[in-house]
Image 1 (spheres, rainbow, N blue to C red):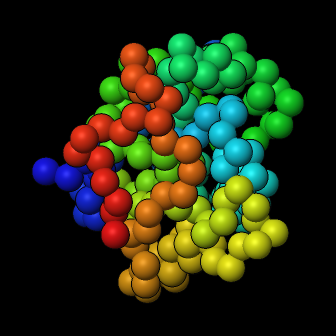
Image 2: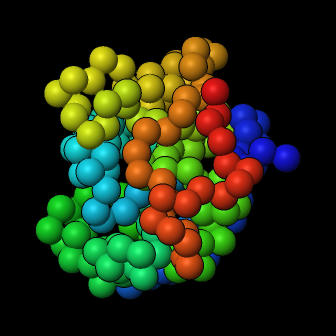
Length: 193
């Protein structure tokens, strides 16, 4: 079995605390036409470089029923900047248009098969995976961006068309797994395409 969720698979449930003081599960987003779950963090230059494009995409598609949910699964023992306390600070400063959840056990990251930050998982109304991978082709420097795969997938799906490119390799820092070297990847994690 592949490390990362495959196209057509169901979204794994979760029960995670958010920076707003609430705890959320998959059911809390049942009214979303499309659910975008993405693994992110506070420090990664690929996240920092592409956050504003992700914000623009989230705001653009919100009126069409698309909901974005961010999850940080990075170990604060590897990167103290990725602590829950720093997540709260970051959300207060940035006011992103999504909830920011904390996966302290990293169980949700394992269930989804998160490889890097950022790594996007797009689910349809039945919560079946329709796109996974990168948001854009150059997340560290979006001034050089030539394609926004996430926006393309959302646009095509909402237009009732098949998604031209439904799997891409996420581009970013690897997830910081607890007790492992900062650059460690699970042995069964590999490129998606």
